[in-house]
Image (cartoon, rainbow, N blue to C red; front, side, top):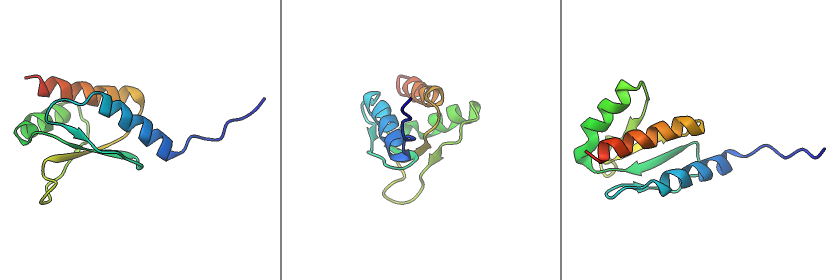
Length: 96
C-alpha cells in the first residue's frame, strides 16, 4: 500500500480559498492565500450585520480596523462544514 504524503497547509489554504472565491458576491473580493486564513474585502455597510450574525453563531471572525483594510475580514480556515457555514452566513447577510 502506498502512503500519500500529508497535505500541506498551503494546499489546504489554496483549496479553501478557491471555495470562497467560487462563492464571491458583488462587492466582495477574496484574496489568494497560502496561510491558514483568508482575507475578504466586503461592503462596509454590511459590517454590523456580519458581526452580529457571526457572534450569534459563536464564530470568531476578525474584522480589520486598521487604515486601508478596515473593509476586510480575516477568516481562519476550518473544516469544510465550518467553511460552508461561514459562506452561507455571508451570503445570507449580503442578500438582505
